[in-house]
Image (cartoon, helix red, strand yellow):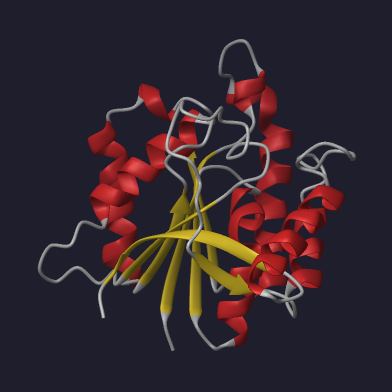
Length: 228
């Protein structure tokens, strides 16, 4: 049994990036904790006002819990950091939030966003997790992987940031139906085809990642560090 921590910026990122892998871990008997750090709605306002987004934030939190249950996550924790404004926070404060969860859950595996995503929250969170999981004596994290998020990772122009070049794949052929169901729980976040965040596009991506390694469906990652 492995202890797994998924660190995502916004509600739905955890399913987009590694929902099938969460279910894969759960099916193997692993303990999966999901941490979502930003509230995911107020960036659509001119100025952040949580009081005007109470219903939307409540629906997102409910969707995150529902998606976690579908995938078999043991726990889903949502913080209240400002959406698409993580670059306005002191990095140390964000790092300490992650360090606290690593100390609490003692994960051996951690999944986080790719460093080159177009979304600033994804990039800042990647940096924070790298710092929080640095390989000091006693660090429980043995494997660190970054995931892609459709409608963010592939939208970064070539040369503007590190490209997502996966070298780690997880067969989610058996888990794809549950990933699709978990995505459908996020009714406010999904978009119609041919948007990159449509169910059709996400199935195409899963099938393509699977075809890259000879299986029906897969999720792709960059292996950042592994200690064996």
